Length: 402
View 1: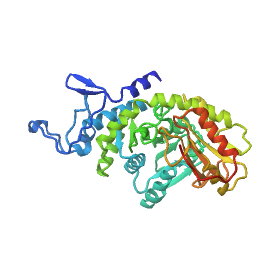
View 2 (view 1 turned 45 degrees about the horizontal axis):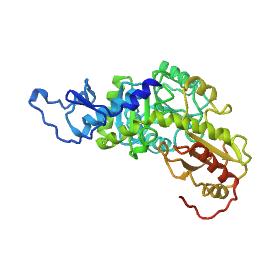
View 3 (view 1 turned 135 degrees about the vertical axis):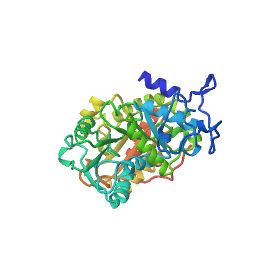
């Protein structure tokens, strides 16, 4: 943890001549001028992925990267435990660059059933119609052998899963996939480069939505594809360039400022989520609480074995409440705000329907549920806000905020 805290706190360090500055500068450029033809980078795929000892190395065309984006990509790769990172404008575009680079017509991809709904939409609406065969598998499966086919090229995991946070046996899945010569891709956004090491547990590629914990306080959209494999990095970097998935240097500079406080934020939020989970345990309005640290959570044993911490997402399923009543309870929140996304300073609540996008597995959640993101507010105030919303009448005066 000390190593990661060091990296995060110094995310903005940047060389300027013989000195360094602590804030990542925004270097915009399209045209780059060379002193002579010997210094001119060749127009080939290798030019995209070459790197040297400085973020200035291999700076040849601003459309595919500047010293700002190169410096930030190195920081992200190091935090995630990788050696190479491809940046993208969002987590979704990082996912698209990865899967479109690795899969072609006639290939088979194996996907856990608990992926984020936007991942499923891309797979079902874009990959499958393009001739890629798609199979979903339940998150509790540890032996994926029966699901593999001779043409399986990619195994895609998200652990913990979306909305109800099922933890997979990533090491076991990666061992089987490697024996089959399939590439393993893990959406590791939940862990925030903080509490799960994808590569030491066998994953080939880690996909991150930096829009969440890493950069959310800065309000910028970014994604990353991290690996230790130089060949995979070159393939995905090439695909991202062909798709025009270039990132804004200013977004990287702002994200580096947010990244400097990542470890401090996560430590506070780990304490907050423990406080809230303890305070809501056994609440009569609740059918179930969902968080991987809870003993009855699906994959809890894997979480205890493989993870070194947690984040501050949890979900609530209610005891016999219809959708209108749940929405009325949501409208009672005063500290927690209603909105999509997570990872920033503010606590948020999002409404979802249990099992809405799943096809081969079922969660214990029922009916209309809430996903709660606990931000940087005082833990006691967040718990009090949750309790007053759950325990109050179902209809209330219009929502106001101080």
